[in-house]
Amino acid sequence: MGGDFRRAVVLMGMIFFLGLFPLLCVGRIGISRQRLEVQKHLNRLNKPAFKSIKSPDGDVIDCVHMAHQPAFDHPFLKNHTVQMRPSYHPEGLFDDSEVSSKSKAKINSITQLWHLSGRCPEGTVPIRRTKHEDVLRASSVKRFGKKKHRTIPKPRSADPDLMNESGHQHAIAYVQGDKYYGAKATINVWEPKIQQANEFSLSQLWILGGSFGEDLNSIEAGWQVSPDLYGDNNTRLFTYWTSDAYQATGCYNLLCSGFIQINSEIAMGASIFPVSGYRGSQYDISILVWKDPKEGHWWMQFGNDYVLGYWPSFLFSYLTDSASMIEWGGEVVNSQPDGQHTSTQMGSGHFPEEGFGKSSYFRNIQVVDGSNNLRAPKGIGTFTEQSNCYDVQNGNNGDWGNFFYYGGPGKNPNCP
Image (cartoon, rainbow, N blue to C red; front, side):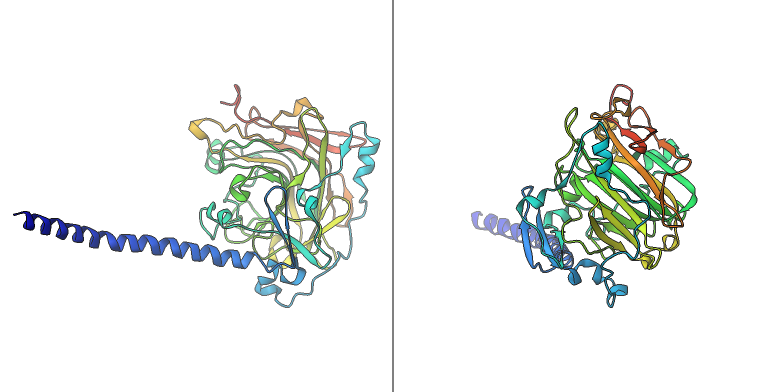
């Protein structure tokens, strides 16, 4: 009797194991396949480094030979001759430090945190190394480094359904109705608090062409805090581009083929240091994006000294000619945790009326016209979906030209 029982137990155990074994194998194969996919993607992104620099914030900055950067994985760039400088800068470019020295408000210079540990040599470009866990945080390997669809602020369409569908909220200034060949702004840098890891807060300029449908072209640059993308809450310099409304094309920084970097000193996606403090020292960055009238590429300059590189014109459809709209301002993701508005901050986390030293600003906002001149934008509009959560107020004066304060705390008694 005992022997029969033991045999039955062994038999049942074998049946159970044989039933479970394929599931275990499938699970293991699935994990190893994902690991392989992630590793292949990392091999594509992380090019062999001439030198690597460990930043105090944990980043590794790889100094990669200019000719080996990710842009040149693009089939259209295989035989591309790198343009080492723009043919023309916009006319009317002035030194922003003149403004801060004349202005009563003291504004300080800014750098990137990794500079404390070293610099990349000439002929190389600094690239923030992508880690295994960075890719795993994305919804898929394919979507890593990409924005979700429908994230562009579309003025005059504060349709609550559309707003809730996209989950993105904005406080922006904008111009439209003309042909634009670039934009410039000096942007106050903060470190807004993020409530959920899948949310972000950014401040940027948008250069837009086409409709807000499936064919939108966009070039974007500014600063952002994005735990999902970077794995921390540091404020980082970023760029973005798309030629099909964030569907298949484009990415953040150098996380796909597109932007060609020529500068050895500034790393896309690296931490900006230091940042502004409430009632404390204020720090800001200047960003200029413009279309070279000779070659047609879209160039980016950071500060007064750093021409970073360019987006080749063939990446785009509408922007091959010009932009039809320029936007400047803040954006956050509101994932409505617990059914309530997020407490993720925009800008400094304070409303515009608090003013200098407390709320965040864009100053000296300009556009580039068809004659390659920087000029004051005409007919500036402002837009926000919910002004009791995040707001925007614009103005004009001698030192700051066209400017606006923007931002807010998100969730508060008037924004439940």
